[in-house]
Image 1 (cartoon, rainbow, N blue to C red):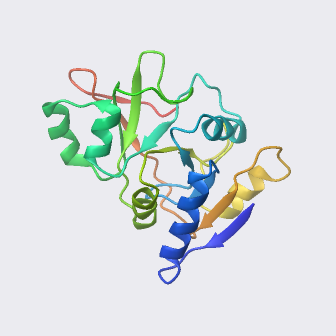
Image 2: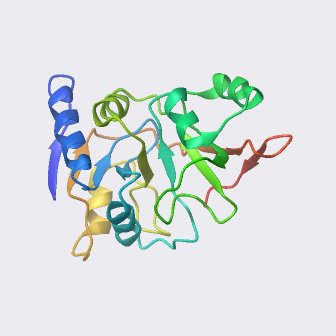
Image 3: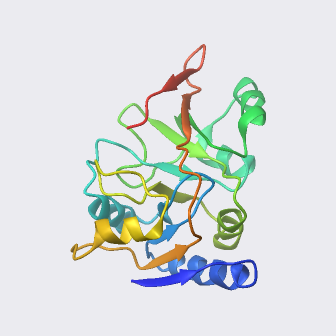
Length: 197
């Protein structure tokens, strides 16, 4: 696994490298506006499966998707005017919104009840990666299932040491905020805040 330290000077170059790898079905450890996450092409079945293998995560616990903007979100999920109004209050930001899925995705993204979690991040590197890649990114925290959520790259590398399945690239941005995103189900009336799984 290649590790790249990111700064303002090399950000565009690293975004380009990450986007090209994601297009090839690779897995990237990416800093976000909360914690480090594992990201991949959300439409690539093998890539999504590899994320579950890396994390040792049960497929019954779906992972969510990063979207670049509302237009992309509307292609993936059924979003009505009321939901759109609510979204304007907390997107971009640290909120995963649950909707009814509009498209089919690889196993592990849409839950059995046909719901999907979407988030529009507020983090320059990630936003530029979404723009460069041009599609939705499957995402989940970069820790192994049941282990602490990672705010430092060294703690992730320690968890992944000598494991059979590993990401292909790690982007190290130093210590992150460590605040997990909130999950809110907008398919319910009134909307309901859900516990993190």
